[in-house]
Length: 286
Ligand code: PDD
Image (tube, rainbow, N blue to C red):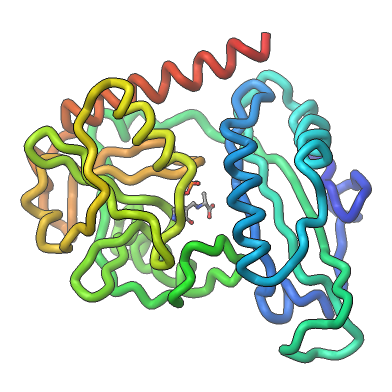
């Protein structure tokens, strides 16, 4: 694996070490981002860094680095595999203190880490057959808009989907399907593209926003409104989206076929727009 950025230095992975007193380790007291990059070009880096700032504000931490400082770090991490598609991962925790104490240290020194990993090419089976999802009760907290490293509920939910043979768990609170454990949710009904509105109960996905933007440009009608879980089974199409998955068509829900049981026509259209957007980003690197 290539070098990792840690607190101002680029070091080999085996040298990238933090204290056991780090609050990220003790409390999950930190925030993170995952940014896809195509041929060295991060996708929507400014939007990801804006969301990082929102997350930092949400947990009462100052931004440790400026946008140009992050860009420089990303440039160096991506340069190790300049032609490949990679995912940047960055994390900021509230650092460590002498004693374990839930209360914040008076003057925290954040731990700042960033690394890149290769993103595998999409499995062609996804476009051919789509993916399966299961519905699960949303057992997370009430600030899902903060992209926090406190991910135990998401970890258990995703694992439960995995054990049910599904790609993702769609999370349901008070009868509403909000998002996946690691993705946003879209539904197509009568030609309308529907996704739940942003708010504290879901993460404002950067891919979600890009999908809405591309669909809007293509004059596809969009509705940002609540989705009742009961609507999913009768939907024409269901999709999930995330930085590493892009837009995936869902063809099975709780072990039953969804829609026609095949990836739908609107998904094909929007996926083509997304692939074109990526290709242009890649070309802009040349
Ligand atoms: N997860 N909702 C949740 C709960 C997520 O964890 C993610 C992303 C998304 C999609 O956001 P974006 O389009 O900005 O990636 C929605 C990342 C990829 C992760 O945790 O690895």
